[in-house]
Length: 329
Image 1 (spheres, rainbow, N blue to C red):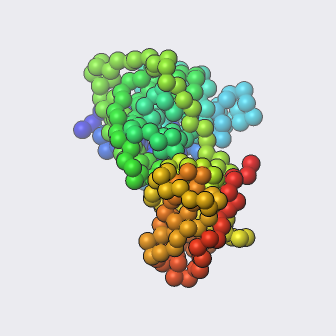
Image 2 (image 1 turned 30 degrees about the vertical axis):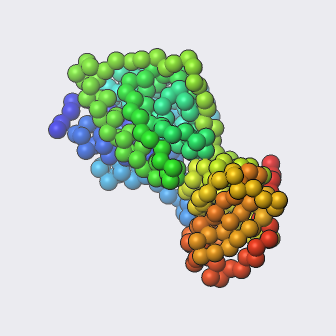
Image 3 (image 1 turned 90 degrees about the vertical axis):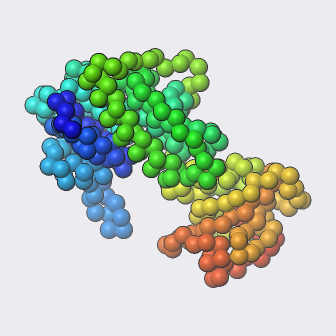
């Protein structure tokens, strides 16, 4: 199917690349793609293009990578060059998904239909940078995708389309991210097709229920064993694949990728962080309320291992202590 609608696109990671692929697959004309500058990555720290840039170049699209978009800012020259590219592209609308740069007013007002955003939450819950992580961490039972008309606030614009999905008890951020990325691509195509027919209406966000999904700090990765078992288990899932939940064993930091249990009725006199039992199925640890079985591990420089694989080369006596029990800073 071919569309006359001209769609500029702004995005950077895999989540955004799925939306760009969906737009291209639906036949939309994408005359310009904005994405973050190439960043060093990998062991060699070589400059790597974003996932969005990779998709754009594979389809022969024009790509711009300004480090900033404020015409009066320190990257004013790059912003002005981007303005000229937008002028040449003549987009009817700009789709924005996990771009990573704040769009100033001149960008928001440039396309005749403005800018619409693919946001991975049920707004106004979890506005901000890390909505998938925070939804799992908080124990939410559902989340979704909101297609939103952008304004100058932080995810405050009117809602255009919303679809809800359940958060499963086994969901990690990685698993939920992939489902939401696919849903975001489908919904943004649907929203643009509706807009082209004049069938899309905007609804203001509710004034109640506003929460903010603050960016994940690596310091949050350190497991605080004084927390209840169910909270630790949720954080382990929320920090997978980044930054990974971490606990100390002596001088070594170990990543914990999977756990189950969280039964607060399992009370012992052991201090939080104490190993209660070790077996092929996992390591049972005392928490601030209840116990938790840890079932997947990773040593520094190693790969993820099941409990049986990990314990084959690692001796942990019952009564030993994981820690520090309290996360620092």
